[in-house]
Amino acid sequence: MSHPLDQWEEDQEASRKEFLKQAMIDSSLVYQVFGTEPGKILLARWKDILMWSPTASRGEDQVSIGINEGYKSFIRTILKAIKIQEDQQL
Image (cartoon, rainbow, N blue to C red):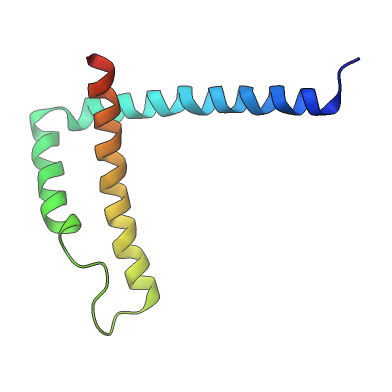
Protein backbone atom coordinates (compact mmCIF):
# COMPACT_ATOMS: atom_id res chain seq x y z
CA MET A 1 0.00 0.00 0.00
CA SER A 2 1.29 3.42 -0.98
CA HIS A 3 1.95 6.01 1.69
CA PRO A 4 0.13 9.36 1.20
CA LEU A 5 3.45 11.20 1.36
CA ASP A 6 4.81 9.06 -1.49
CA GLN A 7 1.79 9.96 -3.62
CA TRP A 8 2.20 13.64 -2.76
CA GLU A 9 5.86 13.53 -3.82
CA GLU A 10 4.93 11.80 -7.08
CA ASP A 11 2.27 14.43 -7.73
CA GLN A 12 4.77 17.22 -7.00
CA GLU A 13 7.31 15.70 -9.40
CA ALA A 14 4.67 15.33 -12.11
CA SER A 15 3.63 18.97 -11.59
CA ARG A 16 7.24 20.12 -11.77
CA LYS A 17 7.82 18.20 -15.01
CA GLU A 18 4.65 19.64 -16.55
CA PHE A 19 5.67 23.15 -15.48
CA LEU A 20 9.13 22.74 -17.05
CA LYS A 21 7.62 21.32 -20.24
CA GLN A 22 5.26 24.30 -20.51
CA ALA A 23 8.10 26.73 -19.74
CA MET A 24 10.10 25.30 -22.64
CA ILE A 25 7.10 25.64 -24.96
CA ASP A 26 6.58 29.23 -23.81
CA SER A 27 10.24 30.15 -24.25
CA SER A 28 10.18 28.60 -27.70
CA LEU A 29 7.19 30.74 -28.68
CA VAL A 30 8.83 33.87 -27.27
CA TYR A 31 12.00 33.05 -29.23
CA GLN A 32 10.02 32.54 -32.43
CA VAL A 33 8.58 36.03 -32.06
CA PHE A 34 11.54 37.96 -30.66
CA GLY A 35 14.17 36.03 -32.61
CA THR A 36 12.94 37.63 -35.83
CA GLU A 37 14.30 40.93 -37.07
CA PRO A 38 11.09 42.88 -36.26
CA GLY A 39 10.96 41.17 -32.86
CA LYS A 40 14.55 42.14 -32.11
CA ILE A 41 13.82 45.75 -33.07
CA LEU A 42 10.73 45.83 -30.85
CA LEU A 43 12.56 44.25 -27.93
CA ALA A 44 15.44 46.72 -28.27
CA ARG A 45 12.95 49.60 -28.26
CA TRP A 46 11.15 48.25 -25.19
CA LYS A 47 14.47 47.79 -23.41
CA ASP A 48 15.48 51.37 -24.18
CA ILE A 49 12.15 52.77 -23.04
CA LEU A 50 11.29 50.53 -20.11
CA MET A 51 14.42 48.99 -18.68
CA TRP A 52 16.44 52.16 -18.37
CA SER A 53 13.70 54.38 -17.00
CA PRO A 54 13.51 54.75 -13.22
CA THR A 55 11.20 52.37 -11.41
CA ALA A 56 10.30 54.97 -8.82
CA SER A 57 10.31 58.72 -9.03
CA ARG A 58 9.55 61.32 -6.41
CA GLY A 59 5.81 61.64 -5.88
CA GLU A 60 4.79 58.32 -7.48
CA ASP A 61 2.46 56.08 -5.56
CA GLN A 62 3.02 52.39 -4.87
CA VAL A 63 0.71 51.31 -7.69
CA SER A 64 2.66 53.27 -10.28
CA ILE A 65 5.94 51.92 -8.95
CA GLY A 66 4.56 48.37 -9.12
CA ILE A 67 3.41 48.87 -12.69
CA ASN A 68 6.84 50.21 -13.68
CA GLU A 69 8.52 47.19 -12.12
CA GLY A 70 6.02 44.94 -13.89
CA TYR A 71 7.10 46.34 -17.24
CA LYS A 72 10.72 45.62 -16.40
CA SER A 73 9.89 42.13 -15.19
CA PHE A 74 8.09 41.48 -18.49
CA ILE A 75 11.22 42.43 -20.47
CA ARG A 76 13.44 40.31 -18.19
CA THR A 77 11.12 37.33 -18.76
CA ILE A 78 11.44 37.73 -22.53
CA LEU A 79 15.24 38.01 -22.27
CA LYS A 80 15.42 34.88 -20.09
CA ALA A 81 13.26 32.93 -22.55
CA ILE A 82 15.52 33.96 -25.43
CA LYS A 83 18.59 32.91 -23.46
CA ILE A 84 17.03 29.52 -22.66
CA GLN A 85 16.39 28.87 -26.34
CA GLU A 86 19.82 30.07 -27.44
CA ASP A 87 21.46 27.85 -24.81
CA GLN A 88 19.40 24.89 -26.08
CA GLN A 89 20.75 25.45 -29.58
CA LEU A 90 24.39 25.18 -28.47
